Image 1 (cartoon, rainbow, N blue to C red):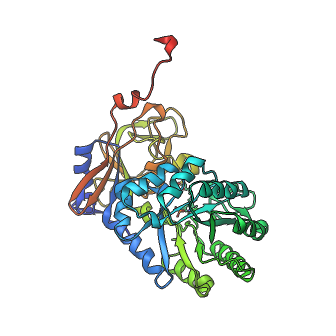
Image 2 (tube, rainbow, N blue to C red):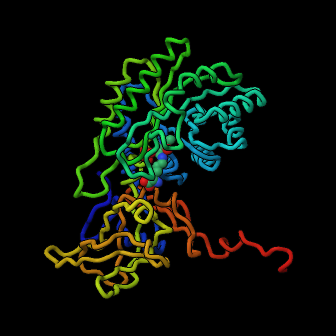
Image 3 (cartoon, rainbow, N blue to C red):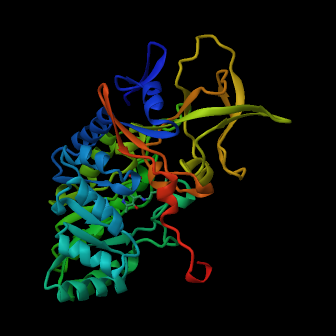
Amino acid sequence: MNHFHYHQGQLNAEDLPLEQIAAAVGTPFYCYSTATLQRHFIAFQEAMTGLRATICFAVKANGNIAVIRTLAELGAGADVVSEGELRCALAAGVPAGRIVFSGVGKARPEIELAINSGILQINAESEPELDLLSQVAVQLGKKIAIGIRVNPDVDAATHAKITTGRKENKFGIEWTHAHRILQHANRLPGLDVAAVAVHIGSQLTDLAPFREAFLRVRDLVVMLRADGIAIRRIDLGGGLGIPYDPQMAPPPSPAAYGALVRQILGDLECDLICEPGRLLVGNAGMLISRVLYIKEGATRSFVICDAAMNDLVRPAMYDAHHEIIPVRQPESGVAMGVMDVVGPVCESGDTFARQRTLPPLASGDLLAFASAGAYGATMSSTYNARRLVPEVLVKGTAFAVVRRRPSYDEMLSLETFPEWMK
Ligand code: LLP
């Protein structure tokens, strides 16, 4: 459920016509709904009732500080994977004590900032990383709570590029070595081995892989405790999928996910960390674009719009489906056409949808790419020297530009000629 709906023939974000925002901000732009962000967070929180869970929003899904703050105001923490994300979370007002730092390749300055900021936990993914964490903690005279991310060798049955829990993936500590490495970590100075962490992939549409992974984590925690390593937290990662395509069966609900967690891990008396990203923000955002041209090709029709793969890369990168909705509501019974929806970037990969059934469109019409709140703006680039698009947050009848469009001068100001060309 989200708060984008037609009202008097116009697609609204909450109580505001998107056309009005487009007129003020220009296209393309990302638009987020506060009410949807809140609704999704509360639904997840309710699903975890009684589980002592800290919900750490995976900032990689949407790093806008106003979006993060909207969630933080409801009690969300943050899952960060870089110094930049850590800075965003802190700037958004997330308490350091609710921030977990994940990722397979943290550099020393990132570790230093994390430890100095006093965050809740750093998840380590390799032996050399554990050694560095210990070294830095000792140098800074601090003790840092760590989680060991294990690789449970479970197939998440999602897109190959976003599956992370198979043994051939770069993530986590090989399942069968986890016990030995945890014992090693437990002896390292400066480290407080607090948690076992797992994250097997993103956009999971079935609970079975979660079940398998959580059962392995459960076994490991029991085994470690028997050996005197007092694991007190489990980090479950993120990964629960969202509905993108109304033709597909909906993914399991947060409530069903919560019930599974309760069933498998509920009796371990552990605090939990959850790291949902997409689930909280995916359907809370749309990318709004204007149709530039309708072009009749040799074998098909193209809708050429002003958004491109650099603004929303998911279709090009993962063959992802995003619903495409005209901002002006089509008249009922209108004859539909079949079209490819493309952007201006100079490669054929710049295609949002192939052979999509759409109502008649004309130059100047506005289109909304749905479910773009997660991994949309955060994955955008300036390819073809296109400016990053603005982000707008709506609340009721109000809207605010929460990231503005940079000027071309600002973009160019990062570049200089070498001395020999001056
Ligand atoms: N925790 C960790 C350690 C992760 O690596 C991720 C996502 C999450 C949590 C959040 O997962 P979520 O709840 O959002 O599924 N760019 C891709 C998705 C990449 C996900 C990477 N890791 C896409 O657009 O589909």
